[in-house]
Length: 168
Image 1: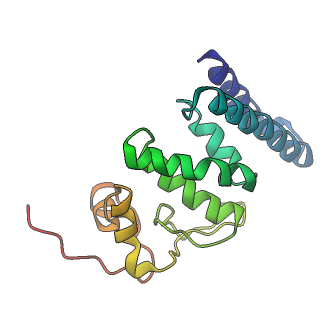
Image 2: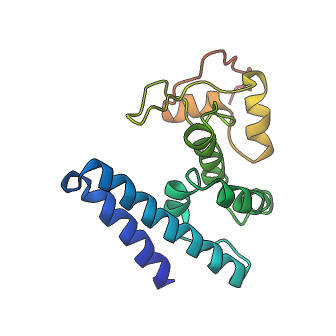
């Protein structure tokens, strides 16, 4: 869909030229473009009944800023994960991003395990109810954190106890 291509291009254009924009203006522009894009994605969804392919960047930048949009899209995304029409890794990352950036809560699925501050005052690394994180990940089709550590080098969050994995 060409409209989504244009929306993503505008989103990235503003972010790529952030060095040329005064800080207060930058935040205003980001919020403005994110608002326009996320509400347009909602309109497209209402028309088609499917979450538009290619809306991931728009979700990534907009959902944590607009709680009403997260409340609207999250149940649909979760259904999509469970029936295979929405990418599970994207869902887990968006869910944790909204918790971290929007609600200032700890991670739920362990998608942000790096304890470093990100320059926006958000520190990843902590996972709520850490004892059950791999069970939650399994419910939506994500690999256990220990596998993400072994395969991709993810940092394991504080308090994480890796399950014993079967030998291959």
